[in-house]
Length: 172
Length: 202
Image (tube, rainbow over all chains, first blue to last red; front, side):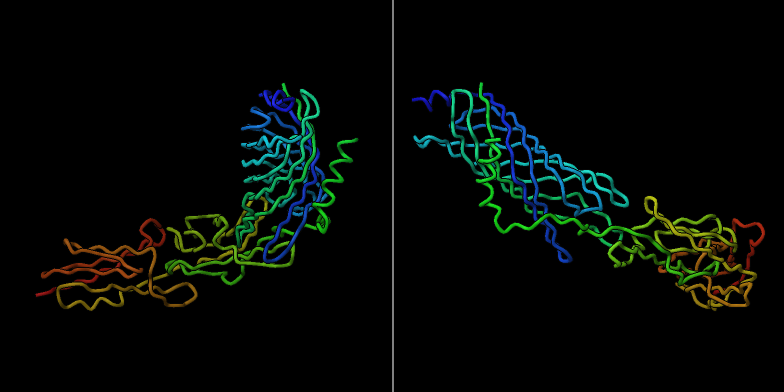
């Protein structure tokens, strides 16, 4: 009864802390980006049904993979989410979407590196009051970076991104 | 604070076995570009000569960048480019600097275009109607003789047809009297030379 009452919310804002792990594997090298990320989002939809979320990931960067000084990353995402009411204390969900982002790099001919991603994830909302819920989740991101021109070859880099997160949503 | 503790506990299990962040660039970068010094001279009427450039990377590797760069000549009337192939311009001989560039990388090489001093029609023994390849040979300032492939114009005093395929010019000659004219460096007033030959085909 309480859950169904909470499920009437449509507009919500959320924030979460995430552990971001990204793997780059090429024929020549392997590289890893293991860091913290923070997400800020606005969503529209039901807590126990469909929702659409627009979010920004701020991904801190202690790695230098593309240059001697890679900056933090900004990653905008648009995701469609389907939550399920299993008559328990939480609402599990699945989500899919895509994203675009950028980072500053100090390469010889590039100062910005753009990227895009396909996202797929799962998680759950745990209502803790009428307007607030706790969220836990995981999202996989297939990330494609802008082509790098090395003159004798064009490098098209793809990475696997793993983002596990926990945070709060505020519903109105 | 609570949320971070909860999330760290939740995430710790998921990230067991994950590697630490890479701190040395894993993706190589461009360090320099260089014109391979395999050509320092060309003849003013030769076929286009392909030039090569190498890119050197920060990881010590190198590769062929000839097709990816912009090639320029300091004087395109003396030597000019088609992609990475250089050939003599409309002026007969001289010295130029050729350059490659990409963003702030560049390299330059001096190129001497050897001047034609005279030429002759060397293969035009035409004695029947039909198609006949034409050939002219140049004498250069270094006393070298070479077949002319560039900066030559063929003309006839009648409606004979000229076709050029793979740098070979062919004339389709008709019965009657044909005066064949070959002109080198038509736009260069200093060199402009025309040679003629007369054919009478029954």
